[in-house]
Each structure stands twice: as structure tokens, then as C-alpha cells.
Length: 126
Length: 132
Image 1 (cartoon, rainbow over the protein chains, first blue to last red):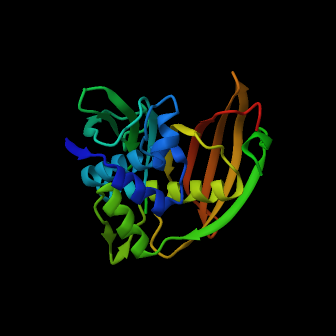
Image 2 (image 1 turned 90 degrees about the vertical axis):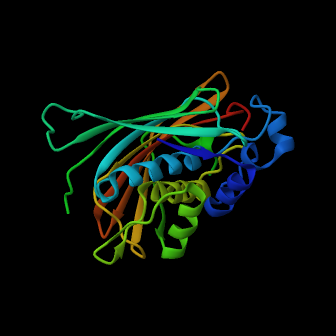
């Protein structure tokens, strides 16, 4: 389990890195008029944090072979404190004994799930 | 090209990308990811590759302000090392309008010298599809 605090500075840094300047992420005036009522983090920024957790848990196995299915359930806002839980599961498929399944749940400080992921790591193939 | 002009089955060849070590370092700082080096070769995080492929897609397809990401699937088929040229092909799996919003499911294939390395499916919803 790890925790991560989202900040507007980090969102702005990610926008500069990725080139994604969607005003929902970086323009507080625009975002205030949206259904979200304020800026939200890029989905790919949150997924990058999930990827970091996968790398921390599985190292090269994630970088050399695996799959991930992520669903963004709720927006992540500046100030949110995210908790990332990575739980191993059995093989995702009966026939795939060399797979290690996992689930990753990301919750905010109100214990609301913001991202849920299912996936599997393969045995190293290269 | 506007997002509302995309049709299911359409294929797009995006500009190739190459990830230098400095880009990985900056990405890892923002996402708090650890650096992985195997036998002296630094590996590119798959989420970074998909983020950059998505950037290439946005350079070709104009997504309206307020577009949000619904989901992301990633399958790593083969590792990608730093400074390798990665070719990207996008396939529109689905493009549909519901209640004035455009739902797009786009499959991205990343290849190094013709070898598939990452397959990703990005799903987004864009507002104002009827008027864009």
C-alpha cells in the first residue's frame, strides 16, 4: 500500500510533460464551470501512479509483459490523498499458469474508489 | 481532423516517437515511479509509452475542451528500451454519439521495427459532439 497526494502543481507539471492542456486540468476558471466544479487530474497521470505502483511491486515483470485494465470511476482533484492498494490474485485464466493476476484499487481520503484496475503479470518472455 | 469526424474501423498512422532517458526521469518524478534498468538498458514504463502515443493522437485529432478519459487498457507484449523508435498505429474501434456526447474507443498499436510491443485501448467521452 502506498499513498500519494495530488496537487495542482503536479497536474500542471504533467500537462507540460504530456502536452495535454485540456482546460479541465489546468484552467481553474474553465473547470469551475464544468460539472466537476474545479480542476481534475489527467486520467493518464493517475494511471502513471498506478504504473509506478506496479513497477514497485513487480519490477521488470510489469515492464516486460503484462496487462492492465483500468477504469476511472471518480475524478481526482488537487488536494486528494490517494491510497493505492495492490493485491495479488490467482492466474487470470485457467490455462495461463505463468500469469500472476492482480487488482489495484485507488481510493481517495473519503475512501471513495477513484480508479480500479485488474490485470496480470506474465512470466518474463525475453 | 476533428474527433467527430472519426469513424469506426478508421486507421491512423501517427508520428513515431523516441523516448530519451531524460523524459523517463521527468515522468518518474511526476508519477513517483521507480527507474528500471536491466543489463544496462533502461526500460520505458508502458504507461509513459501510452501517454506519449495518446499525445501523438491528440496532435492529429482535435479533442474538444472538457474531454475526459473513461478507461485505459494496456497490454505489454515486449519491453521497450530507451531511445528506440516506436511506430504507432491507431484504430478507431468505436465512435458513437449518445446524448450529444461523443464516445470514442481507440486502439493503439506500438511497434519497434515491426514487432508489436504495446497494445492499448483508450476510451474517452467528448462533450458537444452534436455541435462540433
